[in-house]
Amino acid sequence: MKKRITTLLFIGLLVINLSMVNFKTVSAQVIPSNEPAAKVVNWANWREKGYTGKGVKIAVIDQGNFNTKLSIYNNMITKVDDPLFDVPGSCDLKHVQGTVGVINQIAPDAQIFLYSSGRNLKDIVEDCHSRGINIINFSATTSAFPEEIRALNKYCISDMLFVESAGNEGKSLQGLCLLPQIVKVGAGSTGVASLIRESYSSYGEELDTIGVTNLLVYNDNGDLMQFMGTSCAAPAVTGMMAQFYQYYNEKMGKFPNAYDARMYINNRSIDMEDIGFDIYTGYGYLKQPDIDIIEKQLTLANNHTENSVKMIDKQGQIVYVAHEIVKDDIILKGYRLTQ
Image (cartoon, rainbow, N blue to C red; front, side):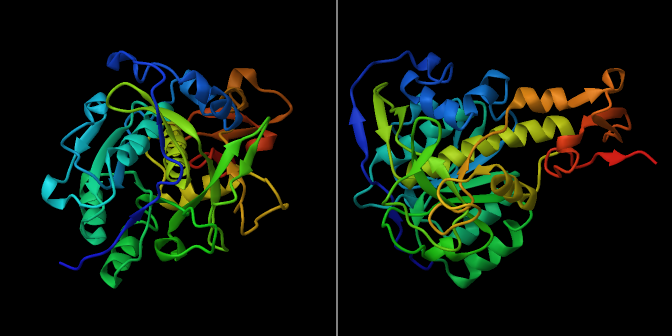
């Protein structure tokens, strides 16, 4: 088996012994210190409305011994790889705990499958496909062998969404981040009403979006741990996409394909610096649309107004849809105009 050296992105990782928690309440609510970020990118509103990643399968590729120190999240994880795949070195459990913890804060009902980053990526992608994985999260900088790129081309252009951290080197993107089928995520900290790009966040023409970083999560001892860098931003985007996947599945009766998911990220990213796309922030920071507004816009026939358009939904039911979202292919895929 070919061996790859993978560097996980550990910038500013810090464990803060702030409080102990009852493990049963870990997923019950957003950690108070994360509420400003949750409101800015609007994942809190989606959680409150019940969009918590139900039915969504997420693969997390990470380092460390998955057989220990992850009991706090046992309700949502499946450890695919055995310890033989663990990679020795500087990595400890804080990275995988941080990654899983961030997803848990945003989409606590998603099912997570843990894979070792020491394993051949081709094998991982193929196994993910066989398990019906929806989203793959990889917070690392690494290159890819030709057979791995072929697997990504086969399964991640249309089937599975592949989310990767851009890197903390503050320089041009490299490795997997150069591939178009990968969603590359930079890091932004929470400002008053938006995110502010972190200067260490790597950049380039291939960058897609900015995710929120500097979040608190619970480690396996029940302590609050601050998770930083693009290693935090990538699972934040993954968690928000798990919310969207649940929403889409409940409205359309199926999960979106990877192309539609990437379009959602581009369309729902908010400009940060330059107008439109730029190499430092991509399309901007990912923000969930207001779920209340979307629900109101998808009104039934008996609520017809002159500001709506008559359409037929997937079940053949006549609905009236507000003008402003008739052209939103992501929200209304499967709907059609009446003759």
